[in-house]
Amino acid sequence: MTQRKVGILGLGAYLPEKVLTNFDLEKMVDTSDEWIRTRTGIRERRIAEKGTATSDLAAKAALEAIQSAGLKPTDLDLIILATISPDMLFPSTACLVQEKIGAKCPAFDISAACSGFPYALTIAEGLIRSGAFKNILAIGAEVISGFINWKDRSTCVLFGDGAGAAVLGEAKDGHGILATYLGSEGAQAKLLHIPAGGSRIPPSAASIDAGLHYVQMEGSEVFKAAVRTMSDAILEVAKRAGIKVTDIDCLIPHQANLRILNVVSERTEIPLDKIFINLDRYGNMSAASTIVALYEAAKEGRIKKNSIVVLVAFGSGLTWASCAIRW
Ligand code: UT7
Image 1 (tube, rainbow, N blue to C red):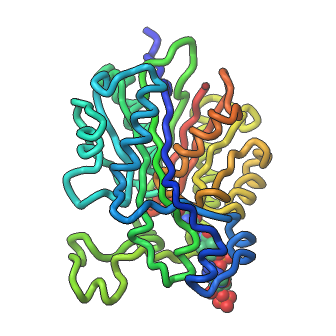
Image 2 (image 1 turned 120 degrees about the vertical axis):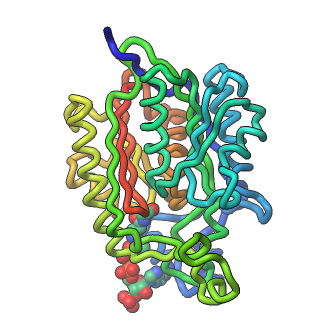
């Protein structure tokens, strides 16, 4: 019996309209367009309006993905939403999206930081392949701007808000997901985290005064880990898929820093022109980065029928993930 293959049936994305440029940031903290561009490759990022939450962006991306799959929200069997900036601690943001889009299926969130979308794809792929579910909506969405210390130049220049979504279902004729690979390393959890707001340090006036509810990162250590884990994850998923690295037509990486992508390109020997990059326009959108990049790469014709596409991500946890797809 041949195994059921799982593919992407539709894609959607939503970016807030408000653009925050490096020049805007020059007026907020001691930084410069030149530093941000040369150290990260980022020129601008999108920021959600006050009062807009992750589920608002996610629902818009989801509706586009469902429509492009030729389905209705009531055709969905499951919603998996990856985020580190949920609307609230509970209920899950996925449940809030379910209500907003008019779906009736079960829904839950996953937390794998910037690796969240490929983690969601991996879960969805297994559940569809097993026959337990038919159409699954996987979302990566963040309004991370509310968790950034806008006085800390070492983090505030890096991040942006956005959402992307994919509908997964059965794929035909050898198309679809060829292999996936996930990894975690909890010993390095403190390299990138928000210390307060959970059960370890519940929110209090003291935690807020100490700025413990903001993203904190040891940038250069995270940089080294990102290069190592993303390069390894590309090679491992290629091996699992039975393809050579030279077979990869388009690499869709997590969009944290152009310098990271340059080193990954050198290490894996995937030329830069095969790597889709949009971090210059959006910065690091955490769980939304890879899915928004996949959406744009498909829209721009960088991915065609039969293309071999590899998604690769890295983030807090530490976590990393990769996924090889025949389009
Ligand atoms: O999504 C999860 C994954 N996240 C990542 O992958 C992020 C990985 N890390 C990075 O991308 C880089 O480490 C950063 C972009 C965060 C930082 O770049 P870096 O080249 O590692 O800079 P650094 O932290 O070593 O800082 C170099 C200098 C320091 O000044 P001194 O001590 O040399 O005088 C910083 O204070 O740059 C200074 N600096 C800045 N200067 C102007 C740090 N941030 C800024 C800034 N503007 N925004």
